Amino acid sequence: MAGSLNKVQLIGRLGADPEIKQMVNGKSVARLSIATSQTWKDKSSGERKEKTEWHRVVIFNEGLVNVVQQYVKKGANVYVEGQLSTRKWKDEASGQDKYSTEIVLQGYNSSLTMLDSRGGNGNSNLVSENKSSLPSENLNQDNADLDDEIPF
Image (cartoon, rainbow, N blue to C red; front, side, top):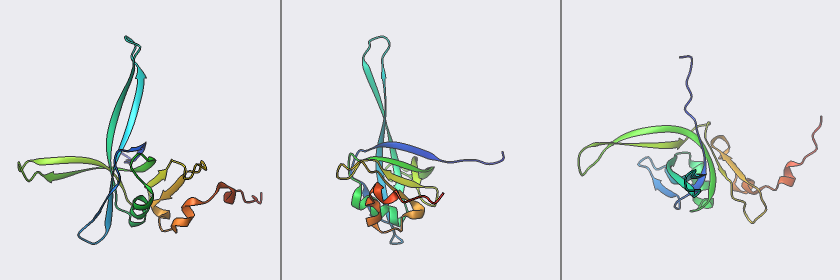
């Protein structure tokens, strides 16, 4: 095999407020629960059906954790891009091995986009891991700021 790719892209809504925790090394981590839904019309009954999948998202980047803590709330519509990761842990009650599969946002190949507009202006806000050190006031730029004259 010449190479491999581990990339997950989701658009969904937060089912709860983000959970922010401190790790033993003093850094913060954010956990999100994102719902994605699929709807279809049942052929036999003509009834509308819906199936919802829940996804665990873990954010390790300190800049993104700060943005999530300040701006992302339950019900927010977000786009996340990260990697799929399965971790193994031992259940304290039963002593059995348990597995948890999560979308992990860390490194330069991860991003979080808040798709809901702020203040009804229709702008969406993009925060990438490699751009997360930008001051938070840059998150609310108007599109008019981006209409600079192109020199070609």
